[in-house]
Length: 405
Image (tube, rainbow, N blue to C red; front, top):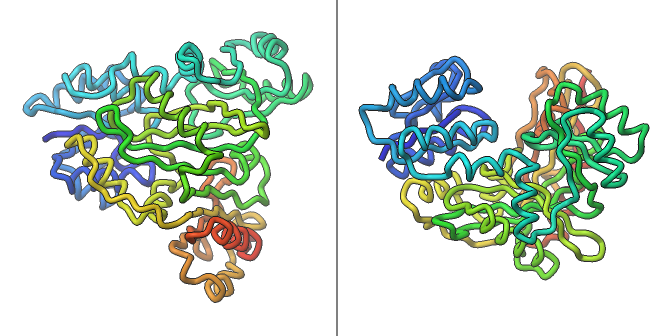
């Protein structure tokens, strides 16, 4: 079967999904704005064809170019695991007569205001929210909802351009930083722990799910440089304290009529046990989270997802053996990484539980920690005991240091 895959080489995990499709027998037709020779080798070697377009943002031009290019074959699926391309993928499905989400079904996954309208109508607890297109609209919405509030892009991803606002002065400061946005979602700030509910679905059935816990919440991690943020993939996804999030996740998928593919939902658990929806995307979680799921379950979700979308089945064995944690590191100082301190001692203490190390080498320039959660590298650790997994992760956070200068 022929599968059109938008952006097969970006973000960094996409080549592995491209390879997954090839491994399950799909002939993968890539569409992107990179030169073919610049694609990662894993992606390039997995493609049956590649169409370079001038820009993926010009959706009408892309649809027409792909329609002409793919006309000699029958395209059965169009997939996109990069959030900005979700609506483009839906338009391509309709133009090519391929299976999958329609444009109307895809809109709530990209428009946070529409998303919350649909889910609120289905009886799901969402933060109080309002759409604003002007600074005065933001001020009115914040006063109606009540401080603290969150300001975020309508079609954003991650926590980019997202601001917590506690009072009028903070609101004015935030407004000065988001003037480039045409639309803003103003919503109630929910105090509590933040989790995810991530799935691979087949024909409307959840074939695989994972629940992760952010330590700390992404909004905090994005604003405090010295923190080593963690994402914890929890082994016991059936724990009582997670039941509300699981049930909400299932209800959200039903309300949005999601059928087949990867989803990434964020939700909150308040101190009183109430669960509140955050947002959902029709894509996998980023920041190497799929790798962490694989380490937690000794599974290959890149191929598992591919099997789901190409053949309508999921045959990966799921054994939840470990709690797995990814810890992101940020170098101290500016400029280029000079040296790494503490890694050898961590291996002496926890070596068998450290399953992945990917740190910038000496001489590499620091990454912008406010633009990428990956920061200057990461470690992945795992352990059957949550207490021990967190102990090891915290040791990585405190004892491993990157120095730049």
